[in-house]
Length: 230
Image (tube, rainbow, N blue to C red; front, side, top):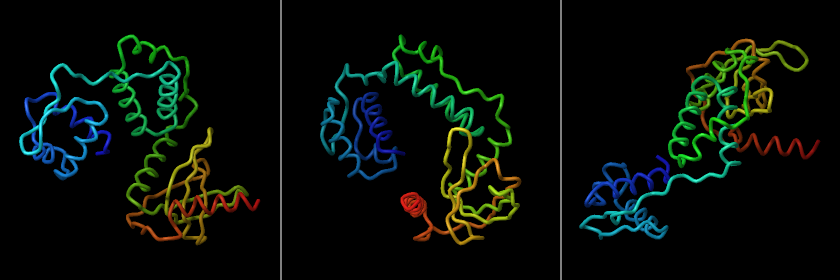
């Protein structure tokens, strides 16, 4: 759980109970009591009226409520457009997560702002996108998260077929296509692979290690260096 989410949960627990101890919060949120004390201090500093003391318990003063999320019309349009693009280009799991996230944000908006979400006239059509593209994206996302190698049947810019074993590090979206940032075992170097040039792909059960010189940060530095020298 991210710290922002934990702080929100603490505020909700304290708001919904007569008294809540640091030990209880520690158990519920799976963090140390020391972390809870620090979080309560920071919440108090931010303006949330927390009453109580260590060893006794805490509560939020009666009548206090967390304010609903406030976004401008431009911010709402930006979120809706982003979520719609994720739904179009992000693969089935990412699309479902994007829709769920937008629904949660919509419910948290003031009532007068909710209709604006549906009325946002910014769209990302999906009818021209091959479903296999999204399925492939899911495989790559999972491989990146689990640090699994990928075996590719790939066609390069010169239309030459090749087989590669890669360590997928990140996905980049260029507006009309995705590419994989990777360490290529076959070439012993960093390479980028366009998804639309992959003819076949298999996720290997073998994991790759996080090795200095082959990480995403190294890929970014190498790419920047190459561009600076171009």
